[in-house]
Structures are given as C-alpha cells and as structure tokens.
Length: 160
Length: 205
Figure 1 (tube, rainbow over the protein chains, first blue to last red):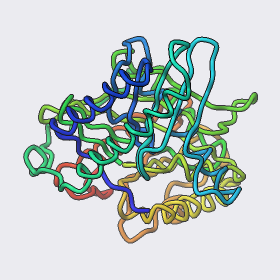
Figure 2: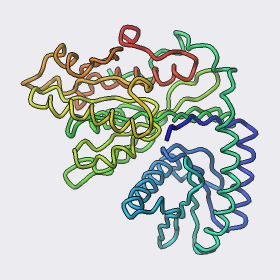
Figure 3: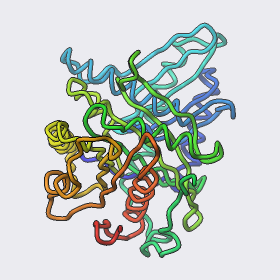
C-alpha cells in the first residue's frame, strides 16, 4: 500500500478534537490519541502534560502492527482491537482505517466495554475526517518555494 | 510519512536508521540523546534483549528548527539488524520520510552490509516505495577500528545507484559523523516538503 503524507488543516483539527472530546465524554475514558500507523501522533485530547504522548504513540503503533502481523499468520486480516489492562490504568487501541489507530487511556471509573463501544463510533467519525484530509492536495502556501540557505542550515550543533 | 499540522504549526518526520546487526545504529541514537539538551529531545526508548541487541526498535524524538512558522520535529528509529527480525524491520520502516543506512566498515562485514541494503530495498517494495523516492544517506561507521575497507571500496559496493547519495565516515560510539549524518538526512527530508528536489551527494557536501 502506497502511503501518503497527512496534512491536518485547522478545520480538520477542530473536527477531530470535537470527535475525541465527545468520545471521552461518552466512554468515560481519560485520554484519547489519534495515531498514524507509522507511529506519528495526529491529534489528542484529555492528555495530561505528564504523559509522554509521543513515545506512547510510537510504542502503540508498533504493538498494533505486531498484532496485525500475528493476525495475518493466523489467516485473519487484522485483530481490530488491542487491550492492555493495568492495575490503575488500561489502554484500548482500535482500528480507525488502514492508516490510523485510536488509543484510549482509562481507569476503573469506566469499563472496557464502554470504551470499545464508543471507540468504534469515534473511529468511524474520525476516519471520515482523515479521508477528506488525505484526499485534499497539500496547500502550496508556505510550501511552494524551496528552502533558502538559512532554512537549510544544520539543525543541531554537535558538542565540541 | 510526514504529518503537517496547521493547528499547532508542527511538521513531524520519521527517520529510520537501517543496517546490519552491530553496525552502530543504536550507538547513533545514544550519542544524539547524550548530546542534545532536554529541551531538544525526548526520552530514548530501547526495546532490546538482555545483551543489548535491539529486538524491536530504538526510538528518540528530537525537535529542530522552526521553518516558515512550523516547528520541525524528527522521530528517529532504528531497526533490529539481525537477519531473523525481518518482519519487525518491515514494520518499523512503515512511513519513513528519511533513511540512514549504517554500514559496518570492517572488511569482514561487507557481505552483511550488502545483504542488509538488499533487504532494505525489498522491504521498501512492500510499501510500493524505492530508495529513489525517499531521502537517504550512507554512514560508514566504525572508522576507528582496524581491518577497515577503504571508503572508495565501500562507495563502489554500497553507493552505486544512478544517483549517488551523501555518505559520512563515522565512529558513532565516539560521536564522529553522527550529527553530520543527522543534519543531512533531516535537511533532505525537510527539503522534500518544500518544493525542493531531493539532494544528491554533490549538493549535500
């Protein structure tokens, strides 16, 4: 499958945020992360500053890809849900579409059944927004001109 | 693939360090992690075996320049080099915006380098991609060790596509060449987003 770049415009981000907020309200989950299957974080809601969302995204995408590979070994197209149960916090990861997954973090104030139910609805809704986003060409704007010499300077300086 | 987010004005890129086992991919990320201030990098996550061989991947997010109002960030990954972890390498490769092929410069590792490069090309085909489409650079690592193949020979064996790519001599464990490699591949990935064509070796040096 040929992968595409993702361009999230302001209006896309607002719609995704609304869907994630509604999902959190209905399911009782604490946080929701929308993640590209390559490991990039696309959007999130309810995430505390203490949570390393970038690392969680990379690890969740990898874990979900691994289970997909296991599913294929069993002749299944995919395991559509991944669930990790902890003593205080649990994680539920589910398919959005071929290019994204939805991760929810929740505790004992709700149940995996509730999270699963509303994650399915939220995934359909957010998948629709992502579909529109990917179908749209990248707006030229800031990206039209090649990088200048200054913009091409080394980003990091090695320690001396 | 890159993610451009207008809401928070961020562009995220994924860079994958590929190469045979024990070539120094993890050493690159460890040196970057040690060298950058906390404000410019996140946590280094290593999924390794008890004897420090990478079993899944290493992961290090780093932030870079702000370009035209967009903060640029790069997620650095390594793949497990050992032959038997091919399925894992393929998964980590998904969505890469830039590649660093870390070769082991020792003469007796030439075969492993070639096999790993072929494996990279095969795994890219799974994503309907090729090395001609993704910015990539070569790093000839372990230049501090004895029994080295000359760089000209490594170039002849590993950098022989129609368009040659930038290469760097390195000793990743000591930090030599690590940031030259990172700065170049990140600049190439960034340039590919801004209407610029992919840089070749002559332009990058």
